[in-house]
Image (cartoon, rainbow over all chains, first blue to last red):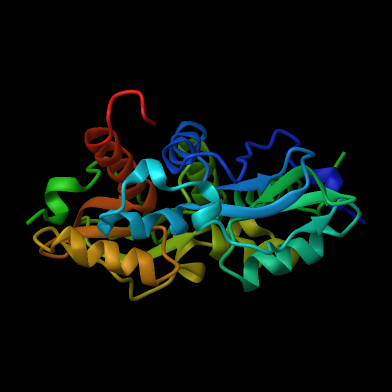
Length: 135
Length: 135
């Protein structure tokens, strides 16, 4: 059985609640990702900030430097423990409009699983023409 | 008024109905895009295929290389004419769970506008109206 920790990407770009929105957008664009998990000083997952949360600013008159990640982030956030199955994560990404889910261990962020990660696995499965096996 | 054609990305990665899902996933991963407009031989928009459509294949054991884009694509697809206002497109991306909308002229795909395109413009606007060094 494939678990989150077998497939997650451990290189997670995160934000803190005090990160400015402009820095969060820069991180998303630089790394070509659609969202950032938000963590506290001890790497405990406290929220998520996504492209969709940023879009309303297109029409805002607020001074951008006043806006922090904590003003726009979604909390609580749907996340998976590192021992949960990939099947469950995949079902979550299909049923919801999430593109990524953070993976945690004792509340601390340890990885992320995104739609492209799963499409890559499906591609591998297609090439092997066999059920998913991660080596 | 800013229109789609002032803002769109004219470099669009497209698929045709008859290419395999394998090829479509290869294109998405190679170009780091989450979806591909599907066009006919004359470049007319006939559908869209996204990561989310691919995720449905996670649990299938069919030889997937034989599945064509046509079988999984969403059709009809929401798109905007190149003369449509950017405000309307922004509203659409804000309200729906689309990450991108194709832009057409006489039914032919001429560009694409995605959420990152809008967040980039928000960032540029922030930089313009903030005192130097404030962000």
